[in-house]
Image 1 (cartoon, rainbow, N blue to C red):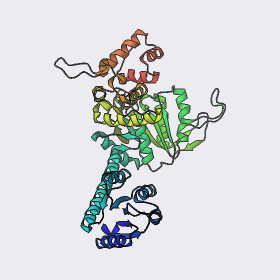
Image 2 (cartoon, rainbow, N blue to C red; image 1 turned 120 degrees about the horizontal axis):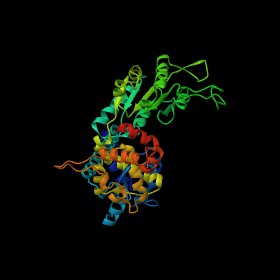
Image 3 (tube, rainbow, N blue to C red; image 1 turned 90 degrees about the vertical axis):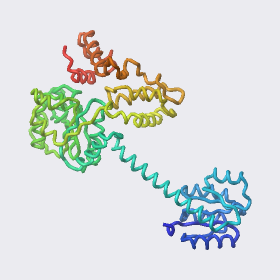
Image 4 (cartoon, rainbow, N blue to C red; image 1 turned 45 degrees about the vertical axis):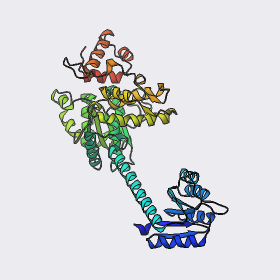
Length: 449
């Protein structure tokens, strides 16, 4: 290891230069010498050494100036200042400028050897820590997903493994858990990362429009079909199609989708010519598809076609150890987007986040953090910025028990729907959510009119 360390000695006195170079070479280092700051700077720019021993007092360019310019030319170079005029001020100034340490002339060979060994050990340790931090970061991140949870780590590992196949994947998880992010990560890790990733929400459109979105149509296929349009499956050719909320498609669309999977081709609405497909399907839902199959609401054959690889994402309330890391991530993200400088979140505020049950999962946490960042004025987020009141915090366990956020939310949604005669649009506006989310909540809690 020592033979790979390159050291540059910079001193205007020839006898000092030659003595230091001889000592260093005896210790097994590759040592070179420069008689001036200008010569040393040229050598550093051409081929930066690991360490430079620099005399403080030299004509034209002194050691402090060389230290500054050397750090600009090679930020990783370690500089040791050598001086016969050591003072506290000189030492502090040199170290403030980035020097590792300083030595006093006349130099003791033993002292030099010990100092350089300590420096090298320190650098090796710093590199090891940096490497471990990067490895740790890679371990906790899977593309745009981040988690320390053992459950999520297993999911990341499974996703990396299945990504290299072309098998269909079914992702189960509540709204806001990151199903689309996981689907994108699988696509990016797959054998077709350069191909398109096309996401389709199966709950956002009625059946007739969704069918044309899936398969495309020919000119004149129906009223207002003024030109041919490619469908999402055709656009995803050679890539991945992500079918979000697949549990909400109608029986007719289920049959059409089954045919596409079996025959690996689509036909435009109003057309006759089939288009051969090379596309991977990743589907997702927050519904219990197995139950839907048992109740006759979802085709069993389609379920097994989609469910080649099953991945279940746990809700945020089951992996609360992720909350502190996600909070830091969102703070960094919104600081950049908003041009703000919010430094930290208070312990009380973090406790509030840890006690909350997060029915909207990571998406809800992101929204809460975005609001907190907008209203924060003191560079710190406190409980008052979070907009999470006592009514929305899951109660601590007690002898008499307590209602969970799920039961409170279910009751509140049902009450709002009844008060507005089940008018979805009006109820969604009062609840401050969109219609799709409200439909999902109605299905989730099995609310009946």
